Image (tube, rainbow, N blue to C red):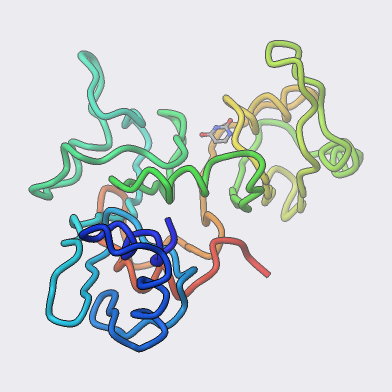
Length: 235
Ligand code: URA
């Protein structure tokens, strides 16, 4: 919501007084004076009006994990180890996954308790780039590049996939960029060109790249101000 709305609600202050207080540099968000009433705040923002605490922000948690093969992208499962089992953070129970990976896939997985952020990353309409390194069983036909770019009709969902970029790196190695995340999408796309994925590794989501020093099974927290300072979308 807009900062002006939060301040206006504070002790029934009203919109005009709220706008005046903001313009008069009396309002701080996360220790910074904010003079724009349309500045976005949410339940994680700490907001002050002069010396009065208007809202104490809840702690938001953003985690990047190098998901190893064999772990399920779920918070609990009776059969298989889940990605949550890898995260020894006291607030791990509050986390959800922002864009799953198959059990047989590895690479960058993002977890958070901030639903607004994860929706921005995962909703197809947002078209956030997701980049994958793919190894296939058969040689990759050059014609596949155009077919990936055209999109495939998926009968189950009754939709055509958005244009995807297929970059052929070797006989059986490719880099694929998706702008959405449909169920088993890359495996199904390769299947449609008569091939089979044998390994799939996610390198990046938007501007967040899996760091080389983060080994399979390791995770790190991403600071909220770092996320805010970079666009989700590349380019
Ligand atoms: N496409 C797939 O087929 N699997 C994944 O895990 C991610 C994208």
